Image 1 (cartoon, rainbow, N blue to C red):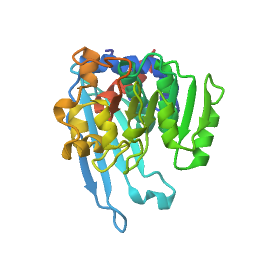
Image 2 (image 1 turned 90 degrees about the vertical axis):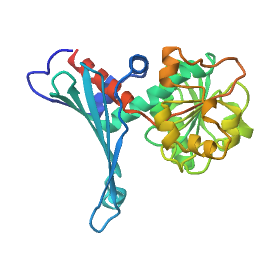
Image 3 (image 1 turned 180 degrees about the vertical axis):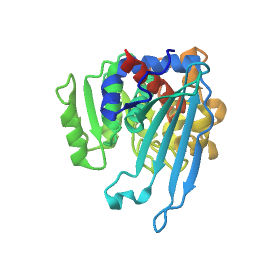
Image 4 (image 1 turned 90 degrees about the horizontal axis):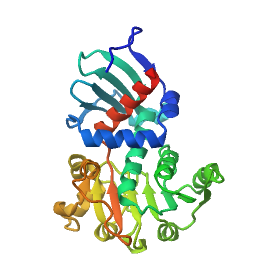
Length: 321
């Protein structure tokens, strides 16, 4: 790693992050990062009082690789911001040298998070989805959804896309944006029918009630759950968990924060020993991926600071090149 640029710390905007972080190279950057590993302390969460308004949260997510880079993502959640026309969640990333501690870059954390989350799911799909999977169902129409679609299409020959969302107009708009871009895309009116149709089912919602039901699944599918990040959030029901070979991004995060893992473990549907592996084990060859054609696989992601660090390092190095 070279020394910091003479001009001091670089500021990298969201548009720059979006342009640099193409799915294919980012997937490979994440694969290398999980193989190599890093120091990733538990994220810090602090409650902040806001006079006259709902309390806010401050989250700090650090990670570093000795002698290379160190980074911290700073996330704030201000629930009352909507009344002021401001986003409730903001994120920034600070990249530092792990040799000198000198700050190297200040990076838009929102776009960085969207890109690395989608790439982590795509990386996992390379191990868990069928190589011939060409039908993708996107459940959810938020900011993450288009990045999920592009990432999955970068690792599998996706030819058909169906979008489902609670807001039918948003689902139609998202499908319209992708229709004709090497994809035949449409919005779904029936989630049950869309789940049964798909080869890969990707969910990015804030649902607290299961959306994907095990009775709708068919052999050979891959289920990708990225939306729920608290113990009370669910995107798949217990029957789906019971039918699938289950993987997580990290044991520490999923077993503590993911409702799709925590709740089935609490009621006995899922035992910890039944979790087939995490992303580090998959990339290092210590856990097997899809074992046979008709297997149902399921990946639950809650995010890890290692992914942020890998994405920030890639953005920084690409900008210097």
